[in-house]
Length: 129
Image (cartoon, rainbow, N blue to C red; front, top):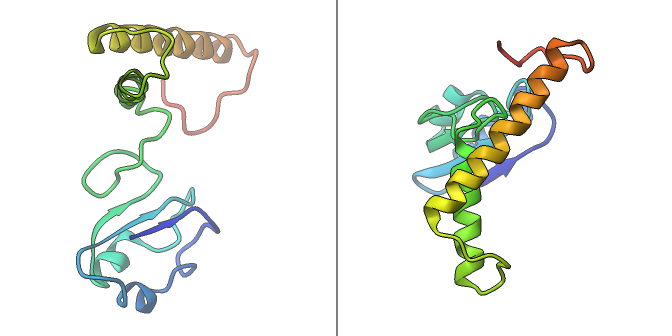
């Protein structure tokens, strides 16, 4: 497995290096806007699962900020583990954790979009309306 979050641009990770990885290797090339190696080069070199920082699919497994539906589920997993390990202050059900996380994330996103729409903060180029 390789996780890279370094210099953007193909060629940072060489195809010949990747070909020496174990069978069915997993690679996350997270540099943006362009990953350290092109996905097709990594696949040609033997990588089974390849993820970048550009979205969700079989080939893109690292969520962006616009893939906000992922974050409540992640928050629930963390909350449930904290409860299991006895370090959580609140003992909520999985459903309660999900609703709480969903509500907080939705409120934050709504406020962010309001600030952008009113010109109080600059809209990043990758945020879609």
